[in-house]
Length: 147
Ligand code: DQA
Image 1 (cartoon, rainbow, N blue to C red):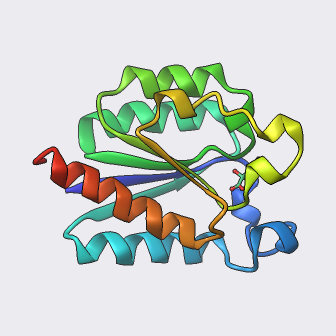
Image 2 (image 1 turned 90 degrees about the horizontal axis):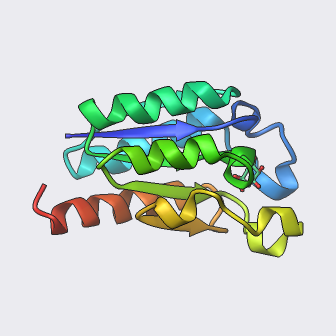
């Protein structure tokens, strides 16, 4: 049983990037948190980060054949990417969208998500702990479906 963890642009800079908004935890900390949470429920995690939209599209396609679900922080592409939305629509596995910050309390351009309508759920504004909540929510959904 496998979960893909996908992180989009600039999230490789977590910890040094705007710590007032995103906290001081690093991407490595995120991967550890997600892996440990998933492992408790018998899932393994494959984690990827890219600053390039097409890489994320490719990993979403790849996950369809090799994973049970996806946790994704599409970062800035959330607000712009028709390609990522279409990639999510093209796969049959549940995708959970997660944002570290409360995007709704920020600039207006962050209030819209191209992906949310085609995702199974969304976690917003819980800091890094949102990734843990996303894993638990995704696994609960998978177990409900009997996968
Ligand atoms: C983010 C929110 C996005 O608006 C922003 O572009 C990011 C990070 C978050 O996790 O809070 O890069 O996805």
